[in-house]
Image 1 (cartoon, one colour):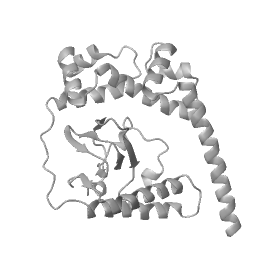
Image 2 (cartoon, one colour):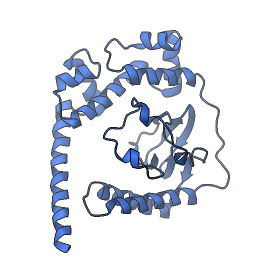
Image 3 (spheres, one colour):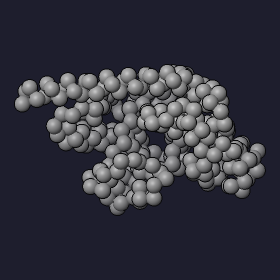
Image 4 (tube, helix red, strand yellow):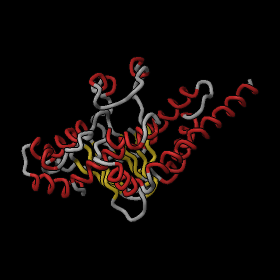
Length: 277
């Protein structure tokens, strides 16, 4: 995963090690790395993010769904291990920052288009992004801090939450019991290391899963709220509005209209290409 920070500051916790990133910084993260992002500035955090395969893989191209719960997707091929031990942060100079943002926008346009050979163009842009990242790395490697205190318990808790978020009885008591700590001690670790309560973390996972299901358009909001572990549509609606800033129904309407607009734009673009051909 390649991330560029356009605005704001944030702590990125990668496998329990905290990095402080600011506007103009870029980060590369290898596959399967447990990571958490905590915005630390008053100004909103704006990120440019792209997920990509370092090496082309025919089998992965056939995947219709991507999830940490699918065993076949939790195997890291040797070809993807090249960037495991690099310095994960680069401070991008002002000239490269402007060029990098332009390439990200072009990448987004290509991804949503049906222009012939757009995948080849995207690979070229991703290669440019990597070149910019390495060109801007300092000669002195970043001094890594030690893994955060209690990270093993936090990591175990996070995996348990991801596997059980659909159970409405999931709470700090059951999570603490699973990792072998007292509820108060585990709550302290979450607050100290992640800056968030266990309850809010669980709710954030449920809302993210709900957003995915809403975009799929296969179920009603009531059904989705049950599928992601909320005990009622009322508690789901309240949590969704609090975390997303808009109601679930408004979120659905907004993204449905954007999807229709995207389809229309792609159709027009395709027609223009055909005319030129």
